[in-house]
Amino acid sequence: MKKYAKLFISLIASVILAFVFYACSDCSVDPSDEGRLGISIELTPGNSIFKNDSVQVDISVDDIDRLGFIEAYIDGQLYKLLNEEPFNFKIKTNDGSPDTQSIKAIAYDNENITSLDSTLLNIFNSSEIRLIYEKYIPLGSDMDIGIRAAEKDTVESISYSLWKNGQVETDPLLSDVIEIEPDQQFCTKDIVLATSEFTETGRYDFSVTMQSSNTVKTTTTEDGFFTLYDNSILITNITADPDTVTCKGTSQITCEAISIQELDLTYEWSSESGQIAGEGSTITWTAPETEGDYDISVKVKDGTDSVSTSISVAVVQELTPTITADPLSLTFGSVEAGSTKDMTFALGGTALTNDVVVTGLTGYTLSKDGTTFANNLIYTAADAMTGQTVTVRFAPEEEQAYNGNIILTSTGVAQVDVTVTGAGIPVPPNNAPVISSITGDPTSVIQGGTSDFTCI
Image (cartoon, rainbow, N blue to C red; front, side):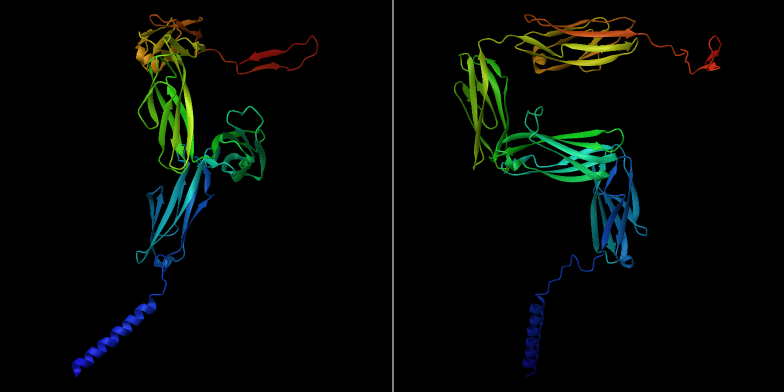
């Protein structure tokens, strides 16, 4: 009998526990919020400062008695450990400071439960514009631009202009001037460009200009661009290297494309003549045996949309070997005797088979790396055709003009001259007299009178 009584009591207890469990299962308790300290960060003078300025970070919690300590982090790195009031510290910026710094504070209470707050510090140059915008906009949509402007002399106005790609010399499609009242050192403006009215896809360029409030007006400009598209695929560029080949010669064709939806792209290449080798975004095209201009086409697909483009390659019987230099003249101006001045030009070439010799002249030396200088340089044909930078150093020894040509030659190729002009001037003596003042006594006299002048 006692055995059954115990079993009955155990059964009743189980029912009661089950009832309590299911009754409480509907209770919603978020352990992430309950019992946590309230913590906040405040920056003085604010969340935006100039480089080489300081900002004070003040951290407050709502229950000091429960606080154990606070960890302060800058850009994810532990910066300070705070365990007594006041909970603050200063950050000193410099010219090398990043554009932004993240500041985070984690508070630990007596039971080691944590609470946190974070903020972002914006660090500007003395005059700067930062732009926030999307580079790819669907056709029929407006363009949003976030402008973050900073000017120590305070911002008076912000203006913008927008053009179709390559037409910045014409009247802008959109433009406006936004007056900033009252004048501010740090200004945040979000503008909307009415690009939904545009019907043409492609690249658009825009320029944002900030004008200061000081007496002598100064302006700071930041340029940007975006692309209006009506297809999920954008072909941004197609190139042929080289774009002129001999019969049966080869050219590397590269198509640069992006998927707005970040889908995988496939490339289908074709040509009216010649042969294609390879796949993907870059292929090798072998020219036919007949001269002419030939189009190589590509269709780019992402599984949903497709877009096509092409490029033309010229085929000739024989390439004419050439040497190129840019610029073809260097003007060094006046340089003190015993001093030096460096300038550069770009060396290039096509269809070269022999070395290129670069010959200097009196007063000038040449270098391949800007460190070791010589009177003459020799480049292999392959190096010259790849493109090289030649450094020219002007080192006058006397007071005279140093004018002439740096000569570029290669066997069987027309000579190219790079004209250089410069003048050596004397070094002023260290003990040259300096006139600090001239005075007359008296400073005014009648006609026929005299005055004594003193030169110091």
